[in-house]
Image 1 (spheres, rainbow, N blue to C red):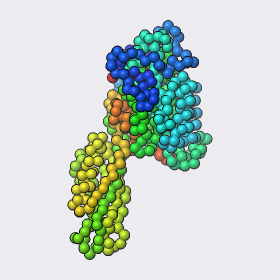
Image 2: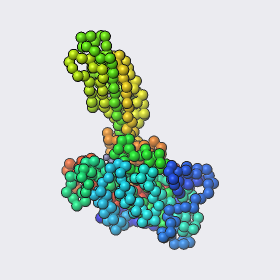
Image 3: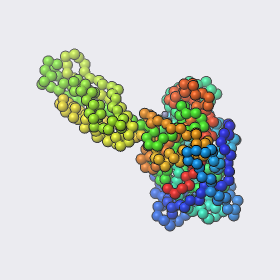
Image 4: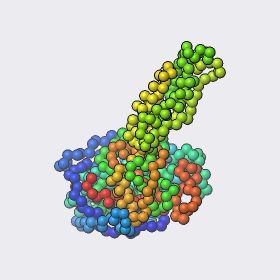
Length: 489
Ligand SMILES: [Zn+2]
Ligand SMILES: [Zn+2]
């Protein structure tokens, strides 16, 4: 694979002052849910470091690693800046092979056994200690700065090792649709395809882990990093919630992710501050009444009229109770009632979705919908039962984290490689992590350069594929973000 980015240079990011003992990140997730990281100043250094594992070569004993600060990254202009953490050509080739292997063996949400094994085995071969999540699929893996002077040394390492972790998140699962491509690496499993690019995300975070582990051995890792490979992104409400319950964010101060975007050219990312995806919830309503003869609706509850009024009046009420700019929309997908022209039915059922661009409005949506349904049903003397199924909130990119991704991309590919992107109406369970820690997601360009005029193959289509050069771009974006995230948070 082409090694398209700038070569590595020695030197570390600025040795910025670090907060005392933010979190002892080593082993904080052993035995899910793990113990909370130590937060009080003066917490003793935890000696267990994955990179100290036997057989993992550390830096030359007694040789202090370089401490030159990396050059500052220009904001809003300038070309790429050399930063450690580039992808050597042989690793780029290996990552493409891994991606193709994953692509040929897609697994659905919470069934990513083989995929978990592939990632785990490769991380272990790098001397790391990945830990599988309690559900049996998905894993995390911490990369901790090696003490200066080698694994036995302590100089300067304590502050770096105790900083909050920067998490890099990937999702592992595929979709229940057939792979319609004719490529050597097409899916070998009927009715399943990696049509959302999660094989690419997994490979990128794995590749970043390999590169960062090597930097850590050279004493160049500025702070701990957690690789997070979550299962079941495509399954509502998303595997992120199970991962959170397992404690995957313990000790994490910031989380970053990318998602493949076939509308963006390879070597570029789409980025925005604030919401970048939308919320999507589900609504199921059951109306009931005594039923009766259509000759005497005044003696019973006219359930057909009540259901019809619900269909028009509930969205109308919401439109006057929620700020229009929140973009909250209730759209019905199903209405079922009645059996005969002269019988007033006893049951009516309605279902639909709520989509919402704004996270505050999304938080209020269940109460507002409940109230509106009760009011309209009550007006028609119908008994109502509402089942409001939470989906996912919008992914809201935190400004500092979005800026970090932008600076990292500019450092690798130049300031012109970051383009604005719009908020989509799609859902993404990465949003659940952002309810707990700041973070951001970028849209990673996967469209081959020169295909600007062609209709891009969208995600969730059976023939979706990517320009595999995007894997190296993604890895180097993440490693640059890790190197630049050296400032105190
Ligand atoms: Zn998807
Ligand atoms: Zn996806």
